[in-house]
Length: 272
Image (tube, rainbow, N blue to C red; front, side):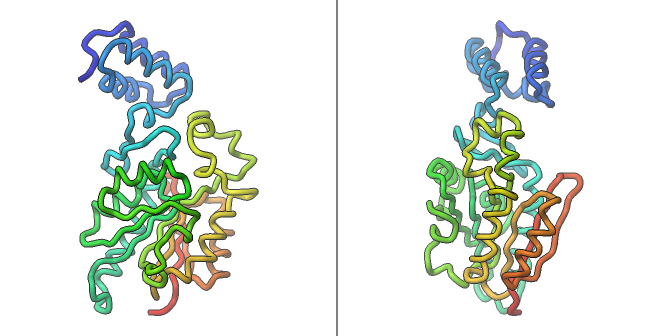
């Protein structure tokens, strides 16, 4: 139920949000007003947003690729640019399902560094049938992903260590939305990210590619022949990520969306 009368007129809410640097102040104001059950609750929500808390964590959900994804405090908020990662992964999974040698028809998809499970949730919605697994090192993220993914299997642990051994050599599509912000650049991020999301979901090491290298090194062992690894990077990091993929025997390419501002590096294990 939204607030019927408020000590904060809508225009005041918009002005406060805009003054705090919220680019889409009008849209945010509408969401906060709709979410608040009382005038006092609205005032508290606006105060917390102005203080820098992510809108999605205040609302308890994020709109991602047309789905409402639950987002718990401290958990990485899915970004719009990651829609490119989803679309590339879905296309590859459909290609796998269409192959005559893929008897089950259900591609095996793993969402590594899954955070809230947003990527896996959209892939479940877009692919039928599909066999989906997800994993993250952060216990809060795992708990959140389990709420979003329902029957999908979600594991806690460090990258491939979290996955069941029977997946080794069976994964058709391995999506890894790894942290790729260089350590020294985290302090330059907006406060809502650097202060309210887990550092493990942001920090990619000195050049931002430390986790990318670990995933690329381990992926060939887990991918099925013809299976693909997809990671999101910055446009600037993509050439080095390509070299890393190639160094581990993957046929690599880059997908880029100017509209979304997204860059995805795709590496395919030879074998078909």
